[in-house]
Amino acid sequence: MAYAVVRYARLRSTPLSLYSLGTAEATMARTLSEFSGGQILSLSCSPSPENYKSFMAYGEPPHAEFFIGPFHWLTKTALGSNQRLTKFQQGFDVIMEDTTFQMYSPNRRKQIEFVSQNLKNGGIFVFVEKFRAAEPDDYQRREDQKDYGFKARYFPHSEIERKKTAVLSTMFNNEVTLEEMARAVSAHFSHCIMTWNSGNFCSLAASNSKENLGLYVSQMPGPAIPHEYVYESSVSQNVATAVTEGPV
Image 1: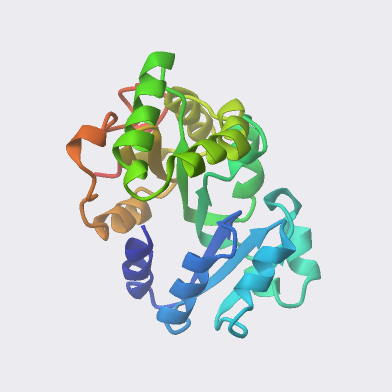
Image 2: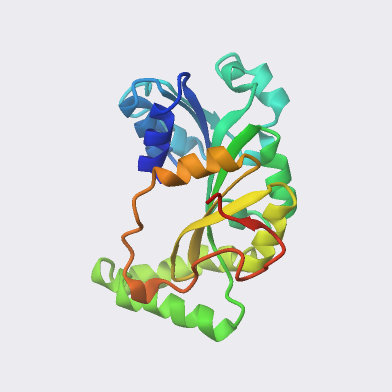
């Protein structure tokens, strides 16, 4: 995803504006801004002041900004009232939501509507979310595969169980199915494509510009995910009439 954003930005004659919402200390966004030499101007947000401290730990990251607060505070008015953020008042070329919505509520249609006020016409909205499976048993099997077939290689059992208790129960209550997500996306965008799937996680990219979406997706290498973790391949198979699947 990050690689595709860099390549997509290099095809432009003007800097690309990127909004990464709720992504902790904004490691990816600030790295992209610095690595691109200013071709990517980024804004990240988090309600945690501790994440801002991490963001600033090695000095002010070049071409990157940070808003302390939840994503639902970041309106056009908020952008216009902060001198450092006024450069983003015209909107963003790319917005990334990485498992943020599911920490607040399952109302994807309203969440997408709110954040999209800051997306430029023809901009691209990227979603990375954990989805409920249509069948609860399928969901649990995929969780077990992730926890005991992959995470157990790197984390002790106690850490895996701690995260389940501390974080995943909140996430689960606010997760939606892929079909529900497709319907929410289709209320705001004409084109959407799934870029990868692993277990219960999927990434979608959506836009009202078929051309921009196609150009962005064309910059992506193939996902390096073992085939046994892949269960979904497209949005349209889940709800055929909700979204125009893919730009190509």
